[in-house]
Length: 425
RNA sequence: GGAGGGGUGGCUGAGCGGCUUAAAGCACUGGUCUUGAAAACCAGCGAGCCUUCACGGGCUCCGCGGGUUCGAAUCCCGCCCCCUCCGCCA
Image 1 (tube, helix red, strand yellow):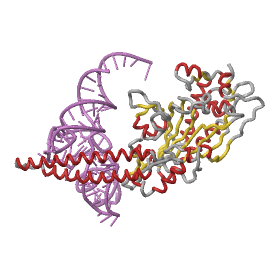
Image 2: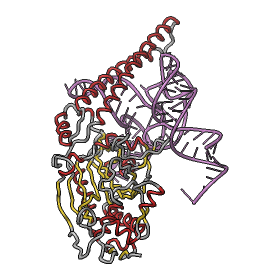
Image 3: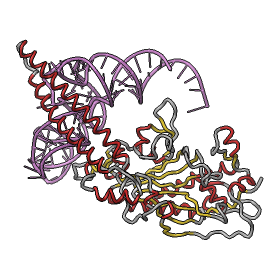
Image 4: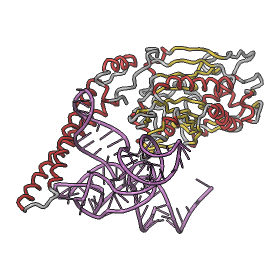
């Protein structure tokens, strides 16, 4: 969330940011609610001060009549406090509700517009030309006996799947492969829980709960299945005051990711592209505000390095303001070339990295203190995909397929996979 | 899952209705002393918020949420977490 105290003075900036995002937000309502909260806090503080004085006065011995009057006055003050507390609580609920509608500010350079208005920054690698009709990942998977979607649907539900044979090895190898460049950059690896408390999940301001939610909840608990290890990595330092010397704090997390994909039926959803469960290696950074843009570049460069090593052609796009999630200030996606996609191949999103500035940290209460300062400051948070397994499989199989239906394994991956080529059975 | 015990400031730990402005120790940060360090001594040392141009003033927080009371760290209720033992189990 944004800082409620700066809403009024930054009003124009916030209005402009919402306009660029195409988001309706009740900014003036939030400002008004914030004023009511501050007023109620001031009133309650003054009353509590009087109560404290009154209570201190009651600590000595009193004549029965005096005691009786003292008790009566105490009771009156208590009732008054009850009223003020109630008013404060109502104003706070109102403020929270209004704040929840206001997304983060947007980066001044972010392209303005919707999904189609992304800015292509560069293309890297050469799109393969096949002297045969290339197959899509489903057909390749069939030839190589890699997936079982029918079993996934039968045993679990549609958009679940089984990985088989070399796909199993690929899943494991890709995870291990992604960890090395991260270790080189000083990331601490984690295998995180796949579930998290709702209070933590809410700190990340994902999609709304309710019919539009992307998040699975576990019945009769306050747990959700995580949609990304961003939640469990970021949650690690909820409510913490970090040591400035530890910043930037770089975390890498492997987890399963669960997404309901509500409302996305039929949309680019063939095969492994959009599924309810997948494995992802995620990067997460806590840093000082002044270094978050550089960290964003770092995360993007790591993602590029990984796709280059996998010899997968890709392009880098900057996501347009209207397509940013609420916490994101700026976002870059890598779209890998997927030969089997669309008509003769298309780019498809395989990674995404966002700079969330202090938007998540404010709710998570992740702060740090600068050397020599007495004030705690909110950290900035960033996240980025190192490897999302299924979509990487789509690009990997598609780009490295051969006429005989086998798939070459890129050199960099061979030590991790233990195979040079995946052959039909 | 069952039975006990427990959650107090960075850590240890006292307090168990008004003498708490949460003791004391450790750690940490300054200072004195010292060639330097250690020791000793002195002082400081949590978070969030309201208010103020500022200096400052004030409020809240003893796992979390309710309740009793004029007054709660202290009593009552619910929940969460940790420890020990038992059961179950990859």
